[in-house]
Image 1 (cartoon, protein in one colour):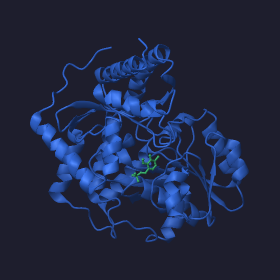
Image 2 (cartoon, helix red, strand yellow; image 1 turned 90 degrees about the vertical axis):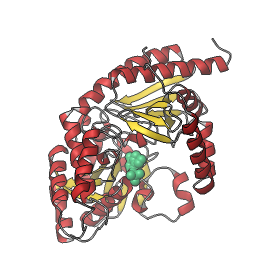
Image 3 (cartoon, protein in one colour; image 1 turned 135 degrees about the vertical axis):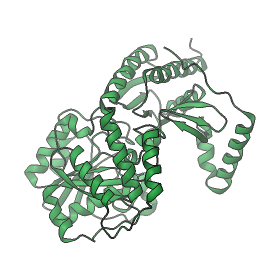
Image 4 (cartoon, protein in one colour; image 1 turned 30 degrees about the vertical axis):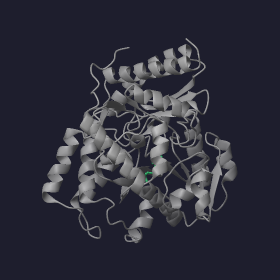
Length: 428
Ligand SMILES: Cc1ncc(COP(=O)(O)O)c(C=O)c1O
């Protein structure tokens, strides 16, 4: 496997800047975070960022496989998107959220074009949690029902309704009581959803592939079965495509792999092109009834700002024009071929690979291997982290502009890292 030709060497001045930044972060933001990241080799302070790569202030180069959990699909500081934001900044600011905006109208129209089926209307937000909050509010407002069924191990954000929907107690316990009316069922179990539905169920809310939960790819018949159950019971289906969308899995939207259309879909993260926050809740024609009669029921000062919409439009154009979903599928296959070799070579380290396109999860044999592999990979020029729900799973989510050479670099780094762990264990 080929290695990239040069890794920038640490520079003294950069190293000093980095150490000061880490000290200030520990002193004024959070010392525990610095300690935890350091132990996983991720005490990196980002300096230059470009395409699939990032340079630590010390000058060290990394291929970024964290990407803010899939926030940089179109690449870091993609020059085309940087230019679109600069142009917008020459003329605009965020705009007055209470009145109509050309760029909001343009982005809503574009989203209606590129989202599946008859998804049409858009409500804008700043981030993913807020977009999911609105999805839940819309489901309740439209159906006049209360219950939301979501999945165990799911992740939908840390805002009010979204926090209640996520399937991980640790994020919720200190903040009880949460919003009432939320039920959790196992992921990839359509019958569990059918059993949980009552006359008061407004919606089922799922990630098509669970990200934080451990890159859990459901069986092919799961989402079609859930769609059918929702239709039979008159329950809305909300798909959170915040990690899986915008080309990540090899299609523009992950739901397209399964041939289904949700009633409400959320998108965020990569819509902001690594530059400016923007998120959207997109929903079907008929759900417009609720919004049209209540145009001021959900407001957000920065949500769908003119600057954010300018970026969102440039991101969608870039993804479509450069067929990033197709490229993600292709690069995903190259990764897969390398993973297959690694699984055979290091069976006591790498148990299983979970993957769709460039949404990739490595299931290690033990919990401790997540942090240890993060550490080793950082030494080998790759920034990668284990998932929030399960430290034995490493999430690899590079930008979708990653090229063959960079894929091979990551695979080589994985090989080197696993070999180092074998040596530490006293193997060969
Ligand atoms: C699937 C999913 N939904 C929602 C969110 C929340 O998005 P944000 O952090 O922008 O609020 C995230 C963030 O990681 C996510 O992965």
